[in-house]
Image (cartoon, rainbow, N blue to C red; front, side):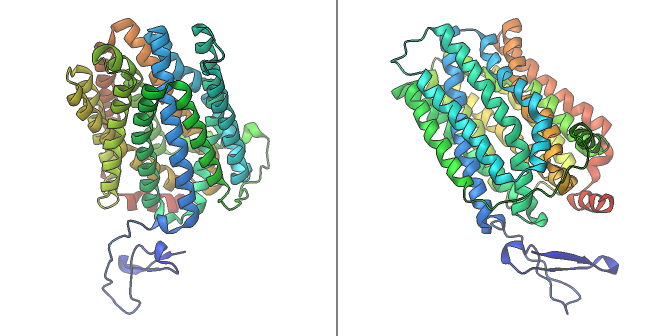
Length: 453
């Protein structure tokens, strides 16, 4: 693994035993070292990281297919925006409730074994969805909706453990100097799955029905579970010396005393809360454009396509020169694109604005992930990720509920415009409160973190 040695006058040497860890090449005798371009495939040269990407890709593919199928199915059965929004709330409640405990468990547990248990639970819920939607059961519509809410609730419980476990694991399978590169590939694979997943879910549901779609989902979850068995065992580096409540309090205190981390979480919490209009896409697909589940899949896939294209570009052109400034710009663009697609009456123009929404969102995702990895000590990653999950992960689902409630009260288009406007306002308020952070480079942030640690 590589190491950086600082010398007087600002010069440094970087030595590495592996090509994957080599970001810079410096000759010992050369007083003016030649800087080689970063290797865009550096993180991928680690076998375990490739298995990690496989796990996330196939799981996200299944999850995105599931989101399209459940959302369209429930709106098709109920024609009620609020009941559509309740899908997000059913997942958010357990995810929030279990998040801190999930972080504590992730810090004190062996990561591979924990992930196997989590995915076994998700696999079981997916199998039950497959059985429940079978035409041979002849269930009433109200019963189907209630059962779907219950199974989504169970997946929310699994999510409360999944986020902290994967966050802790990723820090162990690549060296610290590759965090930005690994975050880019991690997010790119995730977004690629979010392109294919919605389109595949809508297409399969359109052609063969919901039961066939859940059959595909079970297969994909099974593949992601197999990928976990390729991980090495990663024992915990954290040994609890106090009770669980004190340990959780320690993680919360660390987050709230770190200014950049608090503002990053707060910015994402409120921007995603008000920008959760993606939950209303089934209404656009069915009532505005009259394209059914396949149109819904295309709209959800357009945002993810924008994210993947942008993230692949960021493997070469990093936004980390002034990360905090670029984060605020990205969130503002995210809000503007939400307003535009809410006002659009043309399907293809809507796809373009959704593409832009995904592009701006991907920039903010990369920046936040990198900042979080740099600011968090190894022994606290699970607990910090749990707090982050409460701020960010569950804000998506709560934002979906907020959008459903707004659409119920304001109607569809005003609800979307309101959400985008609030997102822009949140970015403006954050800029006013954190102007000093906009001048920092990623190296500045890393140096400050090193001093603190």
